[in-house]
Image 1 (cartoon, rainbow, N blue to C red):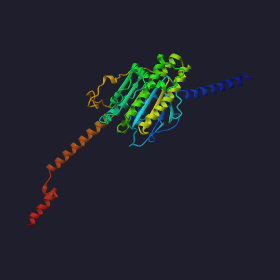
Image 2: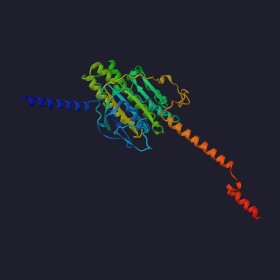
Image 3: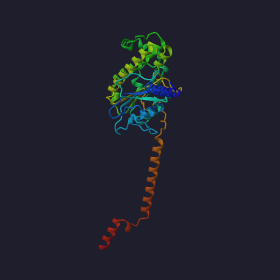
Image 4: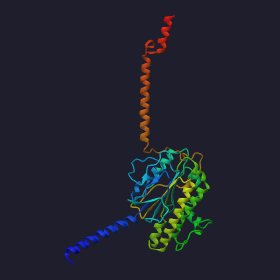
Length: 362
C-alpha cells in the first residue's frame, strides 16, 4: 500500500471516529424530557438543545407568563392566550444523563447544565395570584431544603421534610418498600435509603394531592419543583456499572412515569410535567431556604410575614402606564378648565344662544 493510500485511509478513519463520537454524545447527554402536557401547550418533537439557564423561562412560558428575554427555541410552540395549565411540575434528577421513559411527550438535549431555580416563576405566581393563595412547593430531600408558599403550608403540612422523618416514614405502613422491587438495593445502606427516601417523597406528594383534590379546581396555577440526588449518591458509592445503580435507575424511571400520570390526572389533564436529567452541574448552587416547621398557619396566607412584595420586571411597564395616563388626564383637565373659564355663553353655548333669541322674540 502506498503512502498516499495510507494517508487517505487514516483521514477516513478519523472522520468516522469523529462522526461516531458526535452521534454518541448526542444520544447520551443531559436531557429535558416532557412527561405530560395538555393539548394547548404544544411541544414540537426534535433534537433542539436548550440551555440549563433557560429552563425557568421555559417553565414561565408554559404557564402563560411573560419573560424578560424572548426564548429563541423552536421546541415550544406558541399557544392560545386565554388558556394556561393549572400546574407545572419540574423534577430535576442528578446523577444520570437520561432515563428510559417511552411514554413521554418529547425529549430534548440539555446543554450548559448550570444550576437553576424557579424562584422567579414562584415570585410571579405569588404576586399575580396572591389573593387566591396558589400552591408553590420547592423541595430537595437530600439537602433538606424546602420552600413553600400559599396553600402549600396547609396541604403539605404532613409531608416528611428531614431525612430522619422520611426514613421513619419508610418503616410505616403504606411505604414504598412494600411495593418496589428492591433487587440489589439494601434497606440498611445510607445511599440506598437516600434514594428510597426520595421515591417515598414522590409517593407522599401524590397521596396528599389525592386527599386535596380541590386544588385543581381553583383559578390560580400551582408550581412544583423537586430535586432528586439519590442516583448521584449511588453512583458515587457503588459506581455506574453496579447493579444497585442500574436497579435504582429503572425504579426511578418507572416511578417518575407514574408520578407524572397521577399528577396529570389529578389536575384534570391540565398539567405540564418535565424531568431534567443531569450528570453533574457545572457550578455549585447556594440559596436560602425556609422550612415548613418554622411557619405557622395564619388567617392571612397572602402575606404571612407582613412583608411588601418584591418588584419584578413588570414594575417598569406598570409605572410608565400609570405615569403617562396621569399626565394625559391632568393635561385634559387643564385644557378643559381653561376653555370653560374663557367661554362666552352668548356665542360659545347653544343653550344660551337659543335662550337669548327666545327672549328677543318675546
